[in-house]
Image (cartoon, rainbow, N blue to C red; front, side):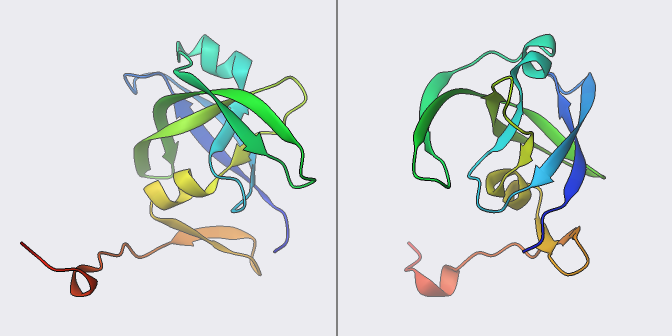
Length: 125
């Protein structure tokens, strides 16, 4: 897939104040990465530290927290990673799925995605 960027809006925990971040769309990243300075400015508090495996195989630790993320008319509360000074902002798979967005790799754009429930695959009580 070709790399492209897309603006995302990251809000304070109450979802009243937002800042726009230009993020690389990365379906291989579990979570969205936002510069730590932006998250702290919005009042987002780290909840825990998580180990992440990078594409080159190394492991790094980053703090994560929860807040409101908005793209277009879609909005959801998602986990976000407090990015380090040299970390790029990334729009990760969890945020894409939570906002029901997919990736059109040819046109390099975000597109609406279907939501799935697999009730036919499990026994209902």
